Image (tube, rainbow, N blue to C red):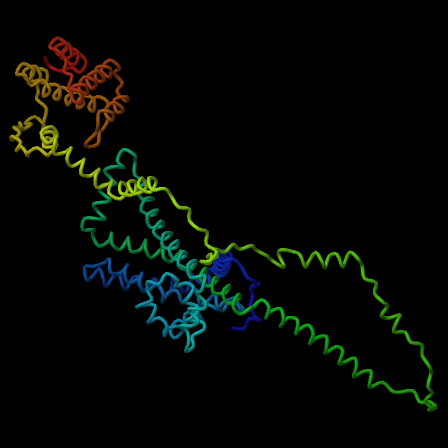
Length: 502
């Protein structure tokens, strides 16, 4: 690379600053990157989706586009590698370069290196440098930055996933709250349970859009890491500084050379040639280089520097050295009774656990009759085959009877109290919908019915409906049925408020 022509200021950066440099380059040359990206990837997206949809496996298109990411990564890398040394290439130049530039390393990046986590860092090594020992260059350039490149891959993959999920959630934001649960279930069934072709193509389009947004930033961040690694390893910043210094000195030398040539070209004044005479000159060496008086503060600073712990570090290290046999202290002789006690303690320590285990086993065997029945009671009881449940078909679920009050009273007298209250609740809801002019969605709850009853202009009928809903809730969810007198009073109140025939 021509380091002296770089358009960016190079100096050793942290790895995060290097990635920010690459992302800033992508933003600066966004038009030159995304225009060829769309021109090349959009037709391929349409072709793959059409072909896979014709084969009945539209999800293959998303998998193929994801696998071909390294091929499209050449576009932002080509633009950035030219833009840092000059102007960004035009659209035609970028498109023409994609037919023959960087195809040789693609076989590796589409096969055994496709799932490599440091692809953004190593791709510039193969495409911009090449050579016969490119494997050694990858190992050197990767170095300590390989972990950061892997983290960059993980973060960008999560960003793409977040964009796809956000687009799906955006569609559900336009669904009313009352229909959100049913719509979410329907959407999940549409996506998961044998989705039609247009749904698969839509999901592929969301994946392609997320990739098109994030992938150029991913390549740019990896290119920034690559520039930082080259700067650290090859001292590009020092080289650029030296080249600039040479340019300044060369220009100054040219001016001095021109002045010398002009001075030599000037005409000399003619005059009598006088013989050379020797003139004694005073020795001025002592004036130019006077004797330096050593400053005592300077000498003190030199001594302090010699004892500076940062410049001359010292440490104390303790080492265990074995004592020679001749210098080993003699062991004092212990009395016999103390040695006997020590042996007993040693035996207890060695065999004590076995003694404790033997005592526990003996205790369990001695109390067998007490804990064994209790332990058998902890076993899982045998499975009991449940008796078949006798259910009664709801013949009145399709339509309400003409005489709701008479039918409910007959059900109550037959002992089918819950069915009677259910009939009254259904009739009340139908009457409320008719007189209030509202429509309830299928599966509406009691709370939905109470909210819809606010539009009922008849306040007396609305209060009666609220009382009926409360009685039904107590019966349905708390198993609290009203007595006969309360039920008869409820029938009279409903018939009077709703105009039912008695």
